[in-house]
Length: 256
Image (cartoon, helix red, strand yellow):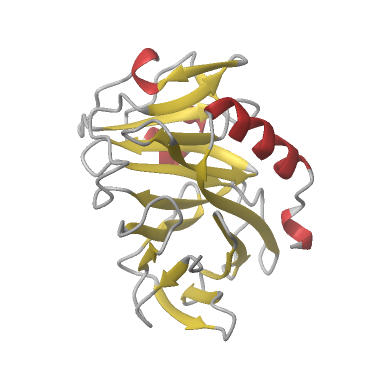
């Protein structure tokens, strides 16, 4: 079986994941990150300079920076049915960041077997139960196709400036820090999971799902790590979830 491939232009944030088992011929797009930094002054891709470099084993390393503001590295690690993105963020400013985030986008718009613009095959978990995304409340903000959700155990969306700015987060709703999409034949699925997870994001227009990690508070010069994993599996939702919880319970992003 051919190994999953990650392909990135040298100086662009957007990349592709191809040769995925169970999704032959499909193209998945990623923008890691679309925005990153302190949640009250996160920097978007249009001001971030970045580079990518491929290693001999098919893994990749990315680096991005905004002069005198921030710097990050991304280690892209390819596995048989998932891809890890280990991100390390450094505060290069003179300010204390009380909360941080990476707005990581996984886009399935060009993957015909999985894309789901109506959200009917999107799944989440809330209050200990699996739920279709269409079963939980939405808030229709200025861009009605997108939605953000608070994560259980994390600050509420209204208390995260980056999230609150979208005006698309329902109150009194919190979900676990992952989102998944089942394939049209209901045999395969993709999922994004982060640790630690700060909030989740979904945009029906592009059939994209985000699990945004946090790096916690950072003082000037400090660095912290987080992980976002993209799963491509043939499994039931329940079996994948048991596996994911077992794997993520053992993960310490700082030691990856």
